[in-house]
Length: 492
Image 1 (cartoon, rainbow, N blue to C red):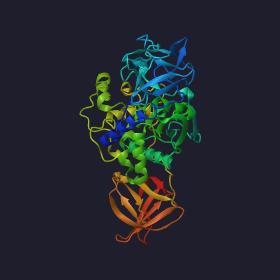
Image 2 (cartoon, rainbow, N blue to C red; image 1 turned 90 degrees about the horizontal axis):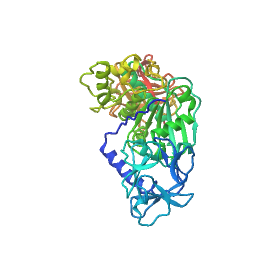
Image 3 (cartoon, rainbow, N blue to C red; image 1 turned 180 degrees about the horizontal axis):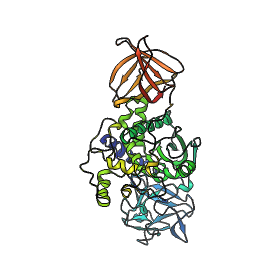
Image 4 (cartoon, helix red, strand yellow; image 1 turned 180 degrees about the vertical axis):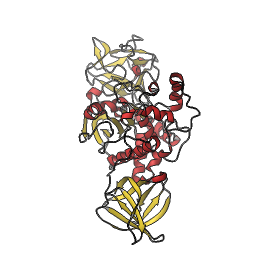
């Protein structure tokens, strides 16, 4: 089993942070604290469900929802009820080992504070003792628990109780990146979500190609996993991984594909990447999806964090925080003064394509004998070089000439831009920041292409969705010549 390092990418947006904090407060006031339905308390570190064994709390592999969280009126505190006996979890008689039994209304020992972590796990603190419910050493007890200690982190639902069904065809090859859209209980699949995720993968594929010289392949079909886990649980990297492994065993275990998961709904907070797995939460997905819907020609302005997490899935650490010191210590390599990089973003660039890798990071990715001590321990996952093996982007058939309303193109010399249909019926050619450069009139369409003209410049443009090319010629003169390649297209 590989070591699952956590590499959070926080979105540098103060407004999003305010929204996240507000949402967190509302979340605590409603969904988890008011829950009266039976739940499990599942320990993140020991991976067991909290049960009562011989009158004492213990962890077992049994998946039984035997607890209820009861909100205390006019308070942020809760009581934890043991449903089989009707008693409550308390620390009245023992400061270390909690008990189950009848309580008095004023007992602060039966009151608990629920604190959420960045990954949707909870820490459970006793009001009276000031200590946390934990299992660091194999014993369920009360004691100190730092925010990063997994023994003091709990889920309200056990992976053993989850079901995961997927709508995905069998994978078509080995060693790819597989887009995965997780739809938790209580959430609805967003229209066009699969196409949006495929477009994201296409953009990242071109980014890696232009910065490294080779790139990854991705599975054309985005898998959809539906689960009875709620959104907070499914937002956990652990649970996203378990769901993916269960529903896409051939992809993850057999073909060793990287699962690039996007969770619908749930919490904000950081994104995470680790060998074999990426988890993008709602705070990232919501903004990107809205951009895809409303300003798809600017999608590349939103994806720096997405490519960053894929870098972690291929083994890269944060350049300045870990890699630089590691390279000097273990390989006697001085990485020098660091510019703004994809894995260490000290300066924001306009679009994701502008973010480079350090030359030593590229060498570590492509040469499996070069300073591998400074990559994330991948366990039995393949080396990054086995994913980064293709030298061109793949054909992306997300739209046809019948329904295309936008496409992103790329060309020689780093040329990039988009053609976007307007509500007026005209087309604009824009850069990736959304600035319009030229206006075209749509002349006609056929099964293969859309035909545009700019009479002011006597120029005709052909958007050929069949060959994935943008062509140009003088209006009614000459044979159209290839101008750009189509990276991805959006249908209306």
